Image 1 (spheres, rainbow, N blue to C red):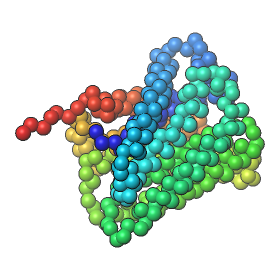
Image 2: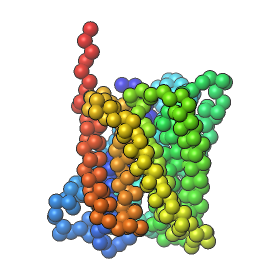
Image 3: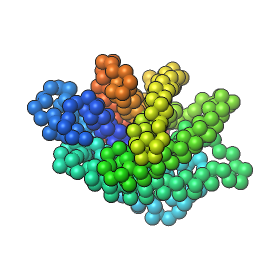
Image 4: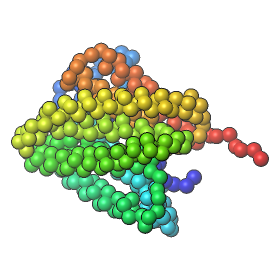
Length: 372
């Protein structure tokens, strides 16, 4: 199989799956510290809790296994002749290079959440340790900024060559959203005022850059879709759902950073935080309904097939985004048993979808050989 950086989407999806039960427990289970740990649920052996912890453990281990495995493949691919330079020079493909950044950004969130959950002593030390976490976060921010400029040049200056972009083109926006979420986590958890200040500034910059690119690219894609009206190829249809996790990342980043911009920067964005969660949640539901109706035949006839393509991981990310926004809406704005029920259901569905796509990704489920 020819390597592509899009293979990092497998680690991204498993990391998102790990965050789903963690976020649910963090905001709805009582706990003593800033971060919930396994000690806080001692004695709770009801089926729901056992299910949440099982999903959390399996997906966390799988995330780091896939990060290590695909990173090794990436380093080998990078050294293999002209494969990487050729990939980066192609404006129709090179957006995939942002997948490693998205996966590493997810790793930061997995360490701050699921890993801390299973290591109570680490959970207690996380706020102090994040005083040092601002440095790798700043390096990740600068790396993403450099990549955005370098890859963006190939899109803007193409020597007149036409390129048909699809919704995978938003992977750089996804990366900015993931970095913003990691930054908001550093800012929210750190105890050092200087770290809080630096984290707030960098996170606001990441949000601003990401949303600026999102608006421009989003308008281009929608206008192109409406103008040409072409039906996307089967492997590209699930890519439309990337909009949902992107909306979630920016909504939650703004929500989490809002409490710290007022104290560290003197800027009150609580109203914007409310609007971001409500509006982006509503837009995500609308987008899912629109794509679900438009691609219903794909879900019925194509998804059950053993053929794998990277955009299928987006189906897991959709459920991750919706579940996280549902929990934040439940806790902060409108407590409802419907949000909680949806969260448990979405975790179950996401686990099944991930398992099915992973079996195709890993080759356990293979397409039937073509006979002559």
